[in-house]
Image (cartoon, rainbow, N blue to C red; front, top):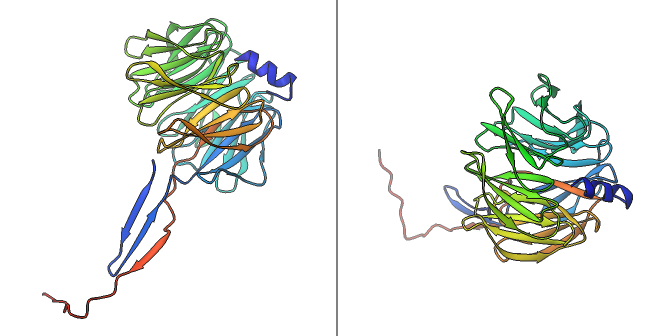
Length: 353
């Protein structure tokens, strides 16, 4: 993964939702896909692009953040997006209503990944340059406590959906550090593949998937025993990984292969491979699980994939060196038709009591 960062620095940097509302006298129907927005961290242009979904249109003005933004985490409410600025040692907090930076939080050196607790009260940040994890109180946007020491070159970080623990990958040591979020201490270390990067949990927190960049594999961890149970071969240099909201599949981006591996999480086998733009990095699902978005770091684009058919449906241009993504919760669809039902003149209403 650090090779990806260096390559980007050298070369320009690299639910379908359906609603039906019934009123007393009229019926109003509304159908449509999940209405949301995808936030894309553009490493080389020092900004964040906002792409509306499912229209796949880019907002006219990107949001300026700190130097070399890498990853984005969205609050459970969708009101805020947190951006790690690898080159600034800081986190930019974006108000998603105004799409403006409302706070900047200093953390450790070279912050890489950020993940929020399920209640949104805290954000955990992996500091690649200082071998630590910082914790941000999101109510005050201040760092709380001392940084948590972890294994060298922490890259990937994710808080489990249960909120009980977090996993942090060590790119240098080929391990995963386990953090107890109650005590904020490291309680274990799990050996995985060579140069592990992104880590993602199943929705029930029983499994974690780790993309091993230089092994071309994904390690599957049983989070009860903190042991690797399966190793899955994917494409060359897997750099991004996400689990679908229902937990049925994992999408893995293969940086060197410019492909996407589809993993069936029941059998832990690759069931499909999809061609993408040049050097894909981050991947994220919409909350309904219908669409996945992939940032193509060298192609400077965002690709939309239909999850049901595993086909590319759209590609849009974003900033320079897009890396990782954040997706807002689904908004309610806008009513598209209104039908007024005329009263039957032969029907006489009956009133009681």
